[in-house]
Image (cartoon, each protein chain N blue to C red):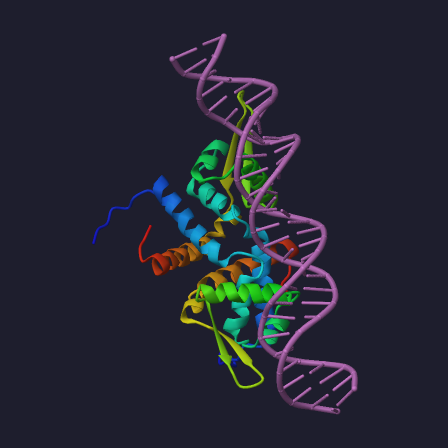
Length: 120
Length: 120
DNA sequence: GTAAGCAGTTACCTAAAAGAAAGCAGTTAC
DNA sequence: GTAACTGCTTTCTTTTAGGTAACTGCTTAC
């Protein structure tokens, strides 16, 4: 299978950037990943998610949930018993974000230990 | 070694969020990761880095480089021959970000294929 | 002598994100 | 009957990130 081992070219560098940018477009922002964590973890109801994320407001949560739903990173299901009941759940696709989340989690933990010398 | 397998608690969810937030505080923004990629890849000079990142401006680059330097994610070395020569290089610490970068790269590539049905 | 490269800085402006606070229509609990 | 929960929406204000563009002092190349 002897492949040539090529040194990385400028194109590789650029390609890396473009894909990372694609990811950041979807995932970045102060709240999206936290919301995904909450939902993947198992929180389903609007208020439940809201309570699980420190300092998030209803307004921001509603907006971000819509955005994540549009991108199929979250599923919104309405059960129309009265009272109306709404459930947010993870999708297969949102589960694919786990790798990113875990990398961020590991790095963040490590970073805090570096700068504060202690764990949370 | 039989550890108890515990179901994740609310505290686990919160701890995850807090660490991820720590990471995002350092790493987020439109440009920081792209700059890290460029420098890790091997670009050293200010203009070289600038040219390697599509559409970045001098102002933003200068600001972000300072920020990354403060956080020890980049090393800035001045060679004071005349003309003054400045080199930016990756640190051990910035290399630790690679895992995050790779996760973002993989996800971003996958995402693009999902929504566009093609690679870059 | 002028154009172009180096490593930035400065000042001004805008759009988007986010915070704060209140409200609403419906339901349930006491 | 009133307080508290649900899933949001609305308005208003502040903050921040980022874009644009020009300009600096210095050096080398033509």
